[in-house]
Image 1 (cartoon, rainbow, N blue to C red):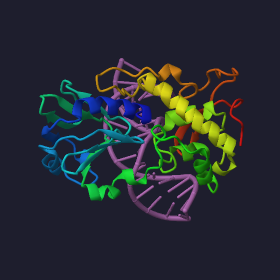
Image 2: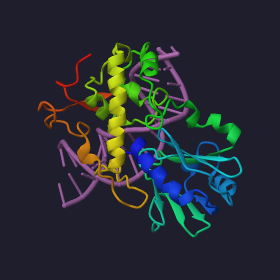
Image 3: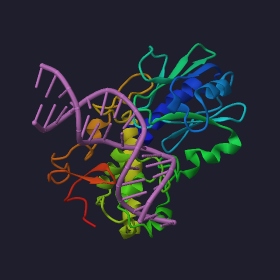
Length: 275
DNA sequence: AACGATCCCTGTTGGC
DNA sequence: TGCCAACAGGGATCGT
């Protein structure tokens, strides 16, 4: 499922295709896709004729400022992907034709994703305003994160998925980060030392860098694809996610799977210290 | 304030 | 073999 690396790769492709281009025609084809603040027809109206200034990313959100001050905010949800000049296919919920005859489509079978448009001074109503520091663009401040975990009793796995603390990690990379930093997913946030958090910050950097280098993670059952249609190649680089019962690459003990906050969680019971 | 549960949705999987 | 319930999960929302 798309997390920060997949969204960053998508951003780079969209930036190359969209920035500087004018949208000649925009269609929103599914009611939920624009559900945040506007009807499908209104999104089409508001975007028609607008020029794209940039394609930015914060956490798993895409932020696309336009020449008239409006901002497109988009999220891939769990099954969303963008495709450039693709043949028509099912679940295409957003379609833009550009002034250079390129077409850009948003395809999202499970409709957890969206493409919304906000006025500049209204962005506070978008999910963007609630996000903590980006796990990739900013150099994460271990002391600050340690501080924000001081009063938290929830398991660190759940806290890593909380986008207001750090933004960009999802279920796959949160497990990978905790494995790399040898922290048990059930550890209460306030039990982590500054040393733990420093390791976690380093591991985050490393896990995300490898994932981006490898074009992101494409799971068998969820066809995340790059905007050029290729599959990501990071699946075999994952140390724990989806590897229940397989030997840990560090110590050989079988990887375990538990459920934390209704999310499957994979870890090595020997390498990752119990809380 | 923080935590955990629930809901949204559909392609795929697994059990009978 | 075929059917159908269970499962997957990011983020918003709600009750405690």
